[in-house]
Image (cartoon, rainbow over all chains, first blue to last red; front, side, top):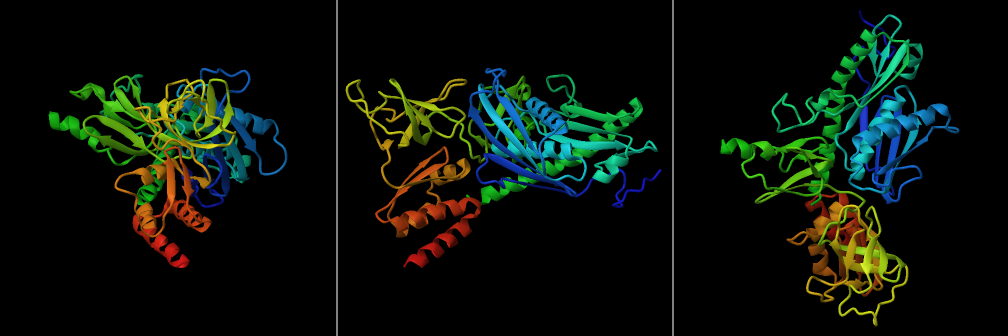
Length: 242
Length: 240
């Protein structure tokens, strides 16, 4: 049951990850995220006073602007903006800064598959860099179902085109907790078992979807360890400065 | 029993935490009175983190997350540098790099009465104190210390203002004096005002001293203590 991938990866293997924060001078928070040849730059401005039209002034408003690599934004990019906005709204604590707007600008530097998950990861790191209060982090992963029924993680652009269906999944990060393992944390179920966003394209059976979820969740723990390590690195750098 | 309780949060103290981490469980603590500062929130019995940074603990019961940002979150009794944006009949509107503009009442000056309201042009830099930072309200500032004296507060004339991260400004203000300011102060004479909101104002008799001090502080952002001292010595050598 081995699948041949052009870059010789196994089906559950992710491409090399890289993330750096605070790369923009004027933005209040920024992060660049690359996953193989896919590279996305995210910048956060705010919170600024006032909310947009048609938004609840009792809560913070999040605005997402998607900048494609070339050309104008189309329907697909508008959809990405919307998904990203909803995802970020659910991880941010909107009641801390009521009547403010936070702008998130996503610049695509290179698209080689799994673009939206990379953008979600980049935006999440940029929010953390800007110090926007969040409930937890979001880690995002792309799962593909091949024609043979195999599930492949983190596809490249070429693989994405060959696939029967794919799912973008966003999970909460795995947290460290003083609470004993398995105890109900307020809501009854451990937060790691949750899912924040799920976007599917193409036809997939229910079993395939659940298999995707399982594979995606397994990969998301690796991703969240990567995020934690990245955040730790940054803070030891800055504590040395004192 | 007692040991177990106190050891549970200890694993997190002075280490990096990321949003979502649960650092304290109130139901297993004997003394449930704790003070939580920036970056922490209460969710039923659990205290969880909402900002990435280092968890700090101060005896007897204060917990907060220390991090460095480019934006400022107003906090009572902080000293900040603000810029006048607008003046209204009752208040000056001041930008302190926070999520909302801050109000400076026109009477919040030493001996302030309706007769002697100060006049500030838009763009004036002021050294101020935060007196109110309530949820959902614009923060309120004052140009006096707690006893109503002008102290050092008020407009900063001449000099040069630049912006740094909030983490660095906290380090510059920490006692004992930050090594970089101490090293600079031994050789040069200059006036400095540091706001916790990440603004620094420097003034000296000659512009080259201002440039040196400002450059040294801005460069020190990413350097360790030893590197800072070397950098300052290098800078000072160049001018003599």
